[in-house]
Amino acid sequence: MRRVAQVIRVLPDKVDEYRELHRNVPRPVLDRLRGCHITNYSIHLLGDQLFAYFEYRGDDLAADLAAMAEDPATQEWWRRTAPCQRPVDEAAPGEWWADMEQVFLMK
Image (cartoon, rainbow, N blue to C red; front, side):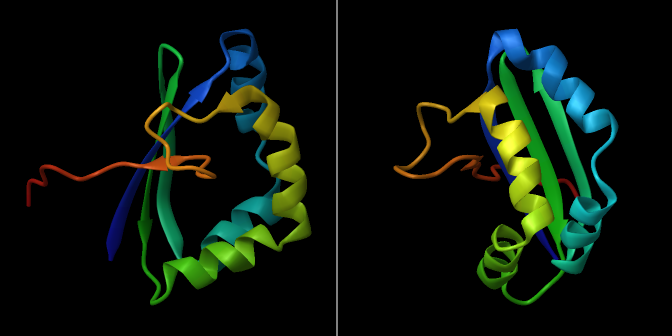
């Protein structure tokens, strides 16, 4: 199992819209996440930053993320959520949600 933590900014005037969108995530989007071996997925908000955490239980995260990106329901979901977000300054060129480095894990 691989733990993944990511961060992105939410536009201050879009916080309420972002919250509302996530009150009813479409079932096909959730099914695709599960089909891509993603579990225990959560998004947290602090100020204008969104922190996402999920656990990946597959063998090829890049391939599963590519399959997710080709899914029409997921593409539509991203069209709805993207206007609420902007990458953090630390994001690599072309990176939307920036991956975070794990510096501690209590077992």
